[in-house]
Length: 238
Figure 1 (tube, rainbow, N blue to C red):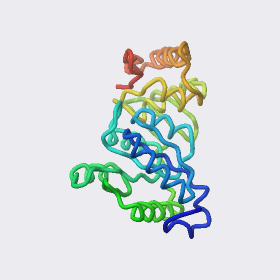
Figure 2 (figure 1 turned 120 degrees about the vertical axis):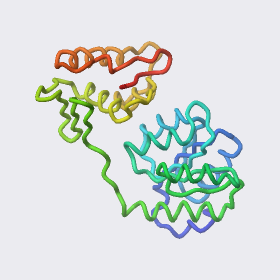
Figure 3 (figure 1 turned 135 degrees about the vertical axis):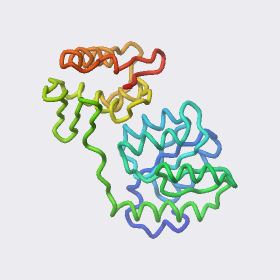
Figure 4 (figure 1 turned 45 degrees about the vertical axis):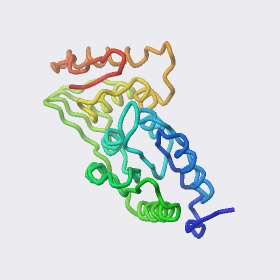
């Protein structure tokens, strides 16, 4: 039986929501509330997993706590907004005005305070989903870093006038690192985003692809050492 004000939305059942909340009891409450209202719900409990899950599945909305382990909610939001305009409602403690302002400045669409009113939360979710259906925004499709130029539409990479002969996987890996320049991206995230699979315990594919990209960048006259391996964490383009 559906509950709350969302029961009148004929297509809400197809809306999939990711709940990112490290308090497992609260996460369960949120998930049950949304499921009872007819939504499909997944949950995770840290910021790094949130990025991995968001890259694996097509979600229509994210409920995002800001105080998270591994990667805080603001960092998740900043990275997400470079590749996606998925609606995000940040969940903050009551009275945490500065956190809410920071979240909204970094691209959150709305916020709800803990403890939350069940009816208000459902109304905010429904309103945001309704608005987002008519407002798809194009994401960035070109990157220039010094003399390195990347074009996502054409899957083309060049240094000055020299075209780099990259495989689709190599281009996508370089694109992700360029898009998040200065940010350390975990191997698990890149494996899902670039290789479209979970990272295995002995998987060295990304290492090999990165090594080949470095060689091609060096051969074209661009410093391949800008692509750095951060041991125990992942990769970064500086």
